[in-house]
Image 1 (spheres, rainbow, N blue to C red):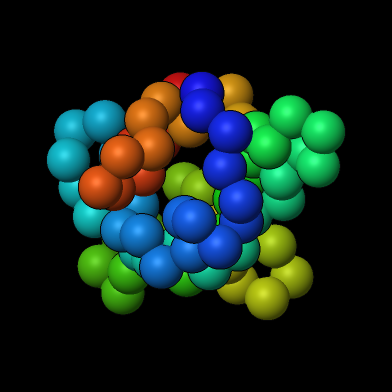
Image 2 (image 1 turned 90 degrees about the vertical axis):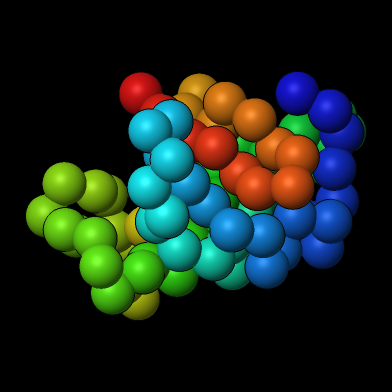
Length: 79
Protein backbone atom coordinates (compact mmCIF):
# COMPACT_ATOMS: atom_id res chain seq x y z
CA UNK A 1 0.00 0.00 0.00
CA UNK A 2 1.32 3.43 -0.87
CA UNK A 3 2.26 6.10 1.65
CA UNK A 4 -0.55 8.55 2.33
CA UNK A 5 -1.45 11.49 4.46
CA UNK A 6 -4.75 11.21 6.32
CA UNK A 7 -6.06 14.18 4.35
CA UNK A 8 -5.27 12.40 1.04
CA UNK A 9 -8.03 9.86 1.55
CA UNK A 10 -10.57 11.71 3.73
CA UNK A 11 -13.89 12.03 1.89
CA UNK A 12 -13.33 9.09 -0.45
CA UNK A 13 -16.15 6.62 -1.05
CA UNK A 14 -15.66 3.28 0.69
CA UNK A 15 -16.93 0.13 -0.97
CA UNK A 16 -16.70 -3.58 -0.28
CA UNK A 17 -15.13 -6.04 -2.71
CA UNK A 18 -18.54 -6.76 -4.25
CA UNK A 19 -18.98 -3.08 -5.12
CA UNK A 20 -21.56 -2.20 -2.44
CA UNK A 21 -21.28 1.37 -1.18
CA UNK A 22 -20.51 1.41 2.57
CA UNK A 23 -20.05 5.13 3.23
CA UNK A 24 -17.59 8.02 3.24
CA UNK A 25 -14.14 7.84 4.81
CA UNK A 26 -14.12 10.33 7.69
CA UNK A 27 -10.69 9.77 9.20
CA UNK A 28 -7.76 7.43 9.29
CA UNK A 29 -4.99 6.61 11.68
CA UNK A 30 -1.73 6.71 9.75
CA UNK A 31 1.68 5.45 10.87
CA UNK A 32 3.76 8.64 10.87
CA UNK A 33 6.95 6.81 9.91
CA UNK A 34 5.59 4.79 6.99
CA UNK A 35 2.58 6.87 5.93
CA UNK A 36 0.50 3.69 5.76
CA UNK A 37 -2.98 3.77 7.33
CA UNK A 38 -3.54 1.21 10.08
CA UNK A 39 -7.26 1.83 10.45
CA UNK A 40 -9.99 3.92 8.89
CA UNK A 41 -13.29 5.29 10.20
CA UNK A 42 -16.21 5.45 7.79
CA UNK A 43 -19.48 7.35 8.11
CA UNK A 44 -21.89 4.55 7.16
CA UNK A 45 -24.41 4.65 4.37
CA UNK A 46 -28.04 4.44 5.51
CA UNK A 47 -28.48 1.42 3.22
CA UNK A 48 -26.17 -1.05 4.98
CA UNK A 49 -26.78 -3.47 7.85
CA UNK A 50 -24.66 -2.06 10.69
CA UNK A 51 -24.96 -5.35 12.57
CA UNK A 52 -22.34 -7.02 10.37
CA UNK A 53 -19.65 -4.37 10.92
CA UNK A 54 -17.48 -3.15 13.78
CA UNK A 55 -18.53 0.29 15.00
CA UNK A 56 -16.75 2.80 17.21
CA UNK A 57 -18.54 4.67 20.00
CA UNK A 58 -19.64 7.40 17.57
CA UNK A 59 -21.27 4.98 15.13
CA UNK A 60 -18.52 4.99 12.48
CA UNK A 61 -17.52 1.76 10.76
CA UNK A 62 -13.99 0.70 11.71
CA UNK A 63 -11.73 -1.13 9.26
CA UNK A 64 -8.19 -2.28 10.04
CA UNK A 65 -5.35 -1.93 7.57
CA UNK A 66 -5.57 -5.66 6.84
CA UNK A 67 -9.07 -5.14 5.41
CA UNK A 68 -8.02 -2.27 3.08
CA UNK A 69 -7.57 -3.86 -0.35
CA UNK A 70 -7.15 -0.79 -2.53
CA UNK A 71 -6.92 2.99 -2.25
CA UNK A 72 -7.45 4.66 -5.60
CA UNK A 73 -10.52 6.71 -6.63
CA UNK A 74 -12.43 4.75 -3.97
CA UNK A 75 -11.30 2.78 -0.94
CA UNK A 76 -12.02 -0.94 -1.26
CA UNK A 77 -12.31 -3.04 1.90
CA UNK A 78 -12.88 -6.74 2.42
CA UNK A 79 -12.08 -9.67 4.63
